[in-house]
Length: 172
Image 1 (cartoon, rainbow, N blue to C red):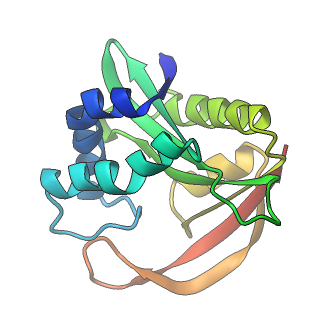
Image 2: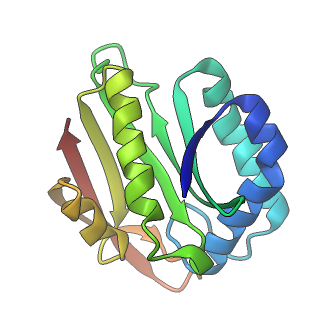
């Protein structure tokens, strides 16, 4: 497995792979802000409209995991913080393709993200995850501390109920 940091040009070139990854994760029920129905076009629009501008501006790191030449995961570090928070970054959209889970990609991506955060002089990382999701114990195992749970925070992907979100942080 290889972890790579993508530039805007890399994002453009890998857009079909990124869109496929996001689409597959949402179809599998991942709580990463999207609702069903969710098309490949919707997925591509997310990468080009929401992620690309931050990559271009240098305020968002886009990391991907590849195995056997296939993109299997991604995570983002958002450093577009207010002036009084130059020491903080936000972990965004950790995803691993449903067919590539349990291979260590999530841990490898998070390790690379923390290295990137240190290189950008970020000493505090924050994130949120669906309460009870399989990612919650992953983050805790990586040393993230639970701040608390907000009940009824977001709609389930299938729009059939609300779920809570767990807020976590880690000091690097």
